[in-house]
Amino acid sequence: MRLRKRFVLTSDQNIPPYDLEADITQLFFLWHNIQNSGIAVSVGRQNFEEPREWLFDDYMDAVRVFYYGQNDFLFESAYITAINPIKDKFDTWTDIFGQASWYFRPDNKLSAYYLKRSDTSLRNREPKWIGFRYIGEWQNIKPWAELSFISGEDKGEKSEGTAYDFGATFFTSDAKYNPSVTIAYAFGSGDDPSTPLVNERFRQTGYQDNVSVFNGQSSVYYYGNLLDPELSNLKILTFGVGIYPTENISVDFIYHSYTQEFPDNDVKGSNLYDPPARPNGSADDIGSGFDIIAAFPVYFERVEPTLIISTFQPGTAFDPYQESATFVKLNLNFII
Image (cartoon, rainbow, N blue to C red; front, side, top):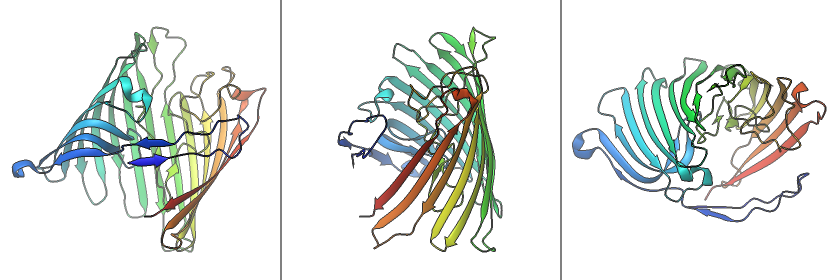
């Protein structure tokens, strides 16, 4: 179970206090290695999670089947339907998911997946995703690559979109401060105004968090902590540097540049308050962001702090209202 409450100390938007949330996050039955077949089945509310959280990072009601009877291969499928969802938007979604993964060399995985959604809401957004991904580690390099295609319908309009995300973290433990460098580029297609009968805008699944670890002790929102957009109608260039000032403290400095493929007055999934933070729809330069993430060791054997400072500098897409934003957050994880 999870109990959660947020307190707003100050805000320009006059955000009201959050109510106390009480959720059942996981409650499921697992049948493991049924009759030594290499098949496992889990039924109930369970955690869908992956290393980069690009497809999934949520608690969902599902029936899942795994087959791991072949060396170096894992096959999984899931029927996902909301019974009493944690998030209201899941209420009308039913998803069918399948994935095949090949594990080669230590810490290297290549996967292909398929996800199809049925939606009973009035919007009737029923996308299908087909994708390929690679996550690995080779000596002092941690590379990754995502390639995904979306099809289906949205409000009766045909969907055809593409997204990719690739990059690598280069690190060493032989130099002072254990430095690392991360370079990445991500693209999510936008809707071409010249093709009114087809919507080329890519959309992520709605279950994603876009969170991963570069080389520090803390995970990062790899599209930016403050803006935190969905990869849709965006080109995102990322450059990061990480160091360990001491053995137990890591600090990441991360820069992001945001550009729309087609100028639009919306940045899907972002933390911007709209209005007033709405792009003008005539320029494609959304702006840039800069994050500092400092992760500290466990204190008093019970408290694990992380300090996040994030800024966003709007580009010409926000003319004439170009006001920068700053976000400061202190996470205190209490270990029980």
